[in-house]
Image (cartoon, rainbow, N blue to C red; front, side):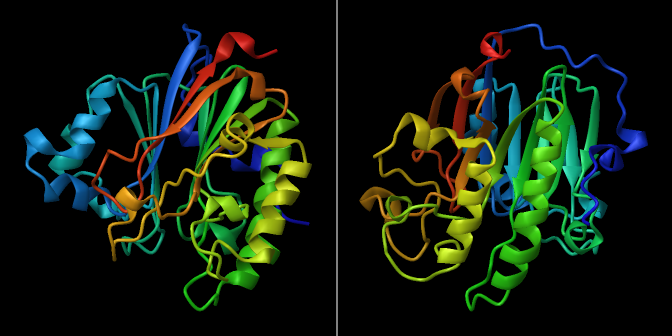
Length: 290
C-alpha cells in the first residue's frame, strides 16, 4: 500500500502556526511553467522582464512549475529580491541538486502548514509537489513527470505516479476541499492538442489516468467552464505556434466537485512570453465553499 496517509506528509519544520484563514472572498491564482525561473529572470532587462511585470498584477498565489532550481541556488540575490516583500516563498527542488524539474509556490496568505512531495521515495527525488494547508482547503502545486519523447517513462507515469498521486489527492479531499494546479503533462481530450499523434501527454494511457481522477470526484475547471474551447498553455518553440494557436493544454486547475461552484473563471494568458508555456489564471470565490 502506498504511503498515502496525509499525516505522513507534514513537514514539522514547515508547520507555520497560522490558522490558515484568508480574510477575503475572491482569490486570484496563477500557475506558470517557467522552464527555468533563472533563465526568465536573467534573459530580459528588468523593465521588460515578463515575470517581474506579471507578478505586479497582484496574485494571491503564484504557483510555478519546472523551476529548474538547485537548493544551492535559493540564496542567490536575484531570487531573494524579485518578489514583493509580502509574499512567502516555498520551494521544492530536485533532491540530487541537479537543476531539473522543481516547483515553487509564492503566497500572501500564511498557511497552517506546508508539506512536500508524496511521501513515496520513488516519486519524491525530483521535487514535484508543494501542498499548502488552509482553513478549508489544500492548495496543491504539481509538476507531473513527462513520459519522454520515446515514452520511456510512460509505464512509470501511468502505473505508479498517477495512481499514487490520485490516492494522495483523495486523502486530502477526505479532510478538506482541494485546489490542484500545475503542469499535469496530459492533453486530456482531442481538443486539448492541435495535432493528433501519440506523443507524451497525448497517449491513451495518460488520458485514461486523468479520466480516473475525474471519476474520483474531481473536476477539470477550465473544461467545465468552457467545454468546447480550443485553448492551449504550451507552444512549441520550433515555429510561430502561439500566433497560429497550435499548442497543447498541459496546465490545469482541478478542484473537488463540491468546490467547482467557487470557480468563477479560468483563462490562459498567451500574450505573456518568457517560457514555452503561458500563465493560466483562476478566479476562486471562497465565500461559495461549504
